[in-house]
Amino acid sequence: MYHQIEYGRNRFPCIVSSMGSFDTTAGNTLRALREAAGLKQADLAAAMSTDDVPMRQQVIANIESGSRPLKFSEAVVAARIFGVDVNTLAGKGNSASAIDLQTAMRELNAAVVTLREAHDRRRLADARYAAAETRFLTAQSAVRRCMAQGGIKPVDRFLSWADASVEQVLGLEEP
Image (tube, rainbow, N blue to C red):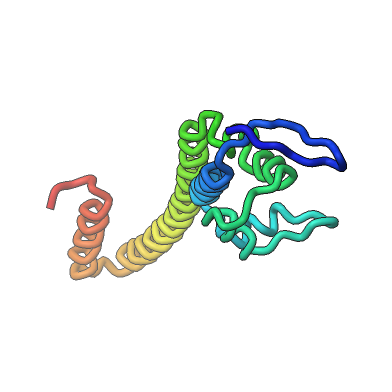
């Protein structure tokens, strides 16, 4: 569609597409990238804020709904944050692969956190096991000393039961 822009006393012809569709596309793409990155609107607003131009959560909401256009300077900042080019925000680039990448990166980050937590739990469990084993061996040694000094038969039976119980817990012997 051709349109004329007036600048001073001159008129310049230009091609104008429907800005509504661009605003909607940019807003939808921005929302998809933000959600794929696991950000809230307020988080994105804070990341996009500069000393000169503060950004608010409500502005992000308006851009995503298409009720406010995405300014080029904002598109450049948003593209940098999400690691895409401005064409992706305009719906001209490959936004699906960018969104897939953001989703995969978020999943990888969650997996790393889960792995670290599991590793920490395993280290704690290993430490508890070592402490329990030391406690058992110390107690077993004390019982053996008492046995050597007095030769008490019920203690022999108890010690055999304790050894069998530990072997069963450790999986060294079937119950």
